[in-house]
Structures are given as structure tokens and as C-alpha cells.
Image: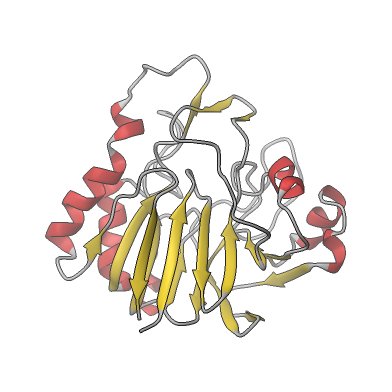
Length: 255
């Protein structure tokens, strides 16, 4: 029986090991990012160089340049179509390591297929930047089928992504003013799980980063999205099993 292991390191940073291939998603490896501070969990401890890094979109809390520079080894950078030029300027050596994908396109990482799927999320770097590339999610197909959603709101084509063995679903976020547009709260995350029909789901993107000086402001929005997602999923997606991971904790999913 083949097993895929997923370790959540906070926010959208996940270490995925499938069929001997290691993938790292949207790495944020630092204790601070602009006005945000890591206020839960240990700093990520990568077990070694990943074979590839999957980058869902250009927002700085997902395409975090200092963290990308700190990742060991020479991993392939799988980025949204149109993002390679920015990556080449920002990360030394990235020009020869980038693979651009748009929805429906795929690449092979040592025998594991990585396919880009749609996401409903703004694709710009930020209001201060002209850099843009449409946000995507990824389906990783090795021993299991795993969906890393990146950042997204609900969209009709979610029904086409499943069925899945594992879904990494973003619920909540990094601040009380993040807003619902292009994001999932706990209830919408459960609806996403219902649509993609995953055997297992892990909530991510919540409970890690929070604005500096606001540690006690609306802490329910920081602490509760993962457990609330599990509660909603039990109602709307009862055939799926949810595991709420602690930072640094690993789940093994069998094929």
C-alpha cells in the first residue's frame, strides 16, 4: 500500500511526499512578513531540499521571495503562466528552474504529475506592482491525487477537480480585514470539499500569521477556522474525513 505524507508548516506552506518525490507549496519560512508576524507554531524545519516548489500566485504571503531564496537545493519552481520573469529577477538561478503552467497544463516531476487547475483569486503581486499572473491551484498525481488549492474562492469548475484522495483547503487567513472575495471561510471551505469529493481534507491558510499589534483582536478568526471547517464538513461532506493538523504535524494518506 502506497502512502502520501503531508506536513503542514503553517499558512499555505506544506511539505508533500509522494512516490519518493518531495514538493513544497507556497513557502513562508520566516517569523515575519511585512506587517504580519508568525504567532503560532514553530518555524518550518524542512527535512531537506525539495524536488520542486509549487507557487500558486504572486501575493507576497505565497510567493515570498526571502523564503524562496532560503530553500536549500536547486528545486524546480512551478509557477503560474506569466510569473517566470518575476521569479527570474527575484530568485538567483530561477530562470533555468522555472516551469510555467496555466489551468489544464501539466508537468512531470520525477514521475509525479503536477497539473494546474483554476483558482478564483486576484493574480496581481499587489497594488504597488504591475506584476500579474493568473492564480492557480495544483493537482498532484502520484500514488494519490492531492489538490493544493492555493488561495481561492468558490467556483463552478471545482466539480471537475475531483475525485481526490486529499484536499488541502485554505480556510480563514491572516487578518480580520482579509475579506471574503477570493477566499474561503470555514463554511465555504466545506462546500469546496463537497464539490471536489476528497477522501481526506486538511485545512490550511489560517492560524499562523496575524498583523503585528493585533494579537488579541478577533482571535476567533485566527484560532477557529480549522475546527469550524471540520464541523461544517461533517454535515455537507460526510463521506470525507478531515484532519486538523497542528503546525509541523504530518498526515499519511493511503492510496
